[in-house]
Figure 1 (cartoon, rainbow, N blue to C red):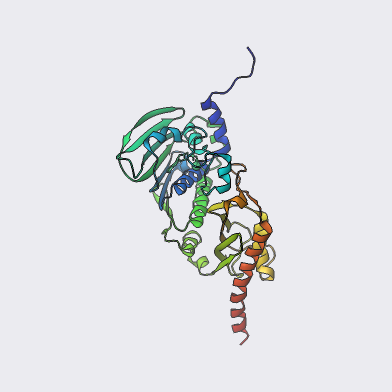
Figure 2: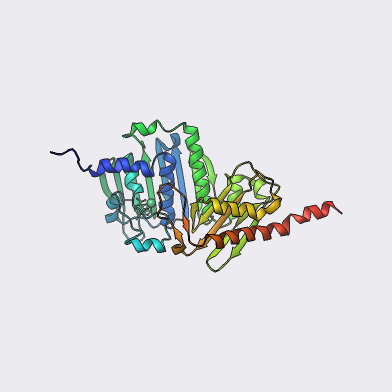
Length: 339
Ligand code: ADP
Ligand code: MG
């Protein structure tokens, strides 16, 4: 007998989980993105011990059909794409069908879900490879997913979690970003029962910025807006007097997905021109809508980089929108001072 064997699916999944879920914050992101994809208008997240003991995500989205629930934790099972061409039209955050199986393979997962059309909901409990129970459940529109004892069977990975506090901060960062990307969704995050974030879900991005960064910051931001043939952008940027020594408060979203792109970042800074001190960075929260076929998202699952077909046009649009807004604003205090 040779030496090469095919790994059984459970083991392959456990290893593969390392690609998508290396820390509790990754699991939170995947679960909340699923809730967003399900069309939820309200998403409540509760964590205990930085998510290692428990992560609970409750949404009021579409729910999962009873017959589909066991499939949802099977590898590469997704309701979001059917063929490779669908990536060109992708509107959802997920499409790989890897998150739930990855998380389920390294935790105890409970799924309680019900759809509008079915007379009852369903409840499934899985522990690592095994489905422990799958039974009818209460009818309550939406989905509740509880993840307990994350990494219980992958102790090596536990060592990489530096400190619980750092992990809680990372989870808060991710929730902040998701809330900024989706002002139309009401988010709540609680840590050990204490509320860390709450947004109204009324579509007002300025209010979300106030919830995330505080009122003082929200008072010193201005709205930007712009459109070209392929893109439409809207968001807020801070006045040049309000800056920081790092880029942490710059968030760009394309079709509701957080992305990182150095060129677009530069375009923001260029929009400020000489108004920004060297080495200082503004706050910028910018939502970009564009035809999905102009954005390549099929890169590495944990990376936020995207390929943009019309990057130069988009850079111009961002630069110009910021320039226009700030041109109206910053001259006023100067002019008053000179009176
Ligand atoms: P993906 O999001 O890439 O499709 P996941 O493993 O994250 O893969 O989820 C698998 C499937 O389970 C999804 O395609 C979706 O049909 C279903 N699902 C997961 N979470 C939810 C949810 N909160 N509400 C409704 N359906 C869900
Ligand atoms: Mg998903």
